[in-house]
Length: 229
Length: 308
Ligand SMILES: Nc1ncnc2c1ncn2[C@@H]1O[C@H](COP(=O)(O)OP(=O)(O)OP(=O)(O)O)[C@@H](O)[C@H]1O
Ligand SMILES: [Mg+2]
Image 1 (cartoon, protein in one colour):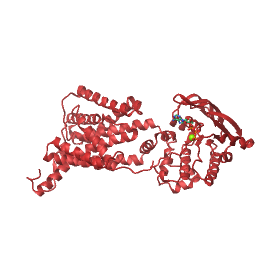
Image 2 (cartoon, each protein chain N blue to C red; image 1 turned 180 degrees about the vertical axis):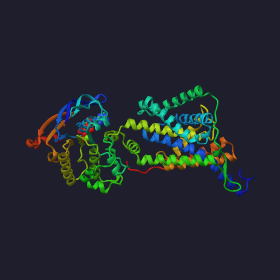
Image 3 (cartoon, each protein chain N blue to C red; image 1 turned 45 degrees about the vertical axis):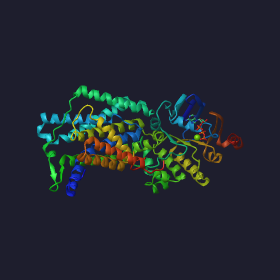
Image 4 (cartoon, rainbow over the protein chains, first blue to last red; image 1 turned 30 degrees about the vertical axis):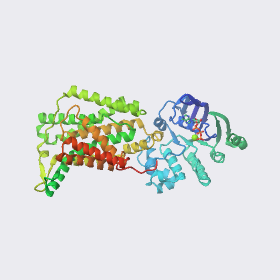
């Protein structure tokens, strides 16, 4: 579903991603692991068109999106839950979700989103900025799902979230994948979460993919060694 | 300066000057609204805002002329048509300017300041070449002319009441659009986080263009109101841009209530003082008052307290 070839990304003169290649199948969850500053956020942002791509190609299904603007990529099926969640703080929960409806043209929040995240229905008239971190994370996921994506990108969704909620989140993400058949790419530093949800794990180090393994055959100690400093 | 008037006379003077200031209030409020929307959305200070107002004033003048010559029977209603046309004309020009000029300068605030200032000079010259250097004035339909006699000493002008009613309606419509419409939601999202707004699928460039157009369109409507208190000339907009900045800064950018109260207090002070003193002294006193208050409250009258 998502097809990345030889992706180079640079901030000005300094190149941060040095030619990444990977594919994500429909229905597949891929975890991208790496320590701080290894380029996870940069990869996510470049896939969303928030950071310009230097060279390489990115495809969703059969369509190339390498040179599209962010909102055009959303229309082609990309959706993004950023690191730090970036909720629109002074807008209500309902309005936050509605911003995600822009590309679908719908005007009411689909009921199934509130079914997945009942807490958001309870709080739909509260300001997004006043929600707890875990609730904001659910809101950010709901906002991303509102655009009916084919590929969902999550950048360190577990950051600042307590272990029991992390377990819930893993369950929810798998449920979403099973119900909607979308591809999920999640960047992570927490190994247990990655092992919990991912079908495949990629390790990124200094802007290159240095290790790739299916969940079934994974050598936990080896992946852990990449993540320890 | 109040010595020669009795208390009741003073009361009447204040009330009447207050009503006389209503049109000024309307012009300030509409101008400030447009300026503040544009500034809030894209951080652009539009130095040419006064010229967008004057375009609206010219459109109003030509509409009145057209009605007088071709549709005299409908002349009483020309103002409504003129306002709509002024909105469309200034709004369209605004969108063209955004597309051709402003959008290339978004990340360079100083350059937009210079560019819009240059634009204001260009527009003034265009008006001079196309419409002539002579100032023009509209003729009011009969029903707007007179005044209502409230008491023996207090009379208020009908056109003032009328223009203010319209202004209140326009302000309310803008507020409702901001908080209820799809455009408004997109504007607020872009203001809060431009990058995230584009990552949820909002076409931020289109929102920018539309917002710039709406802000300028409202300035055009201010121009329609302006034709009732001043004569329209190529440089007449210059006189208002500074006052409008004053209103926006004084009210605290991004607060609608602040903008309304600030427009009200500045126009009323101005209008009341003008009765007793010369216009320029009145302006000096207003300015000193605003500067004094801003020294005490640098953030303006109102600020929005939010978590970001
Ligand atoms: N705007 C920027 N300009 C220049 N360099 C940047 C910019 N943003 C990130 N970088 C650099 O790019 C590299 C990768 O950063 P990135 O944010 O992608 O890391 P990350 O893997 O997401 O880290 P973390 O786990 O801390 O979120 C870092 O060396 C960082 O300093
Ligand atoms: Mg990161």
